[in-house]
Length: 132
Image (cartoon, rainbow, N blue to C red; front, top):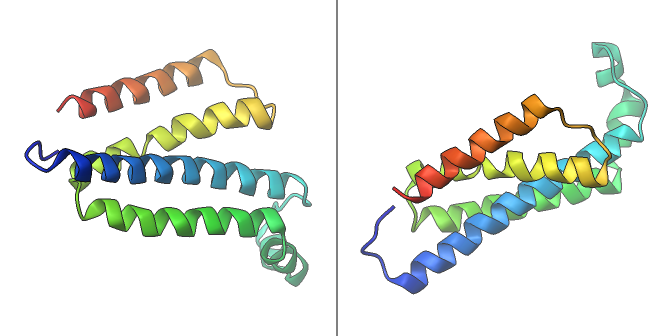
């Protein structure tokens, strides 16, 4: 990350990156919520059926997830104008961490010790990147 850029510009880009992380995580939770309330798709015919496609494209939680991802895309591009992609893209992995926590809290998913260990390693990697 370029240390010589003005502090205000850097802070704005970091806020945009943080919003992208949260939008991506909440988008995934929204999609999972939607798909958990639909019939399981377990083959190509089920995936490509008109009923499945219609149920997906008209679901308010799918639409919400798309809006969150669309917003994140726009903000991501804005942050890319300031921050190094070699810094930003690894930091995006924090969305995986946040998504797992949100899945635990809001969806009641069980997260094994081995998954928590992996999540810890992702966070540790992000801390190292932040220090670079």
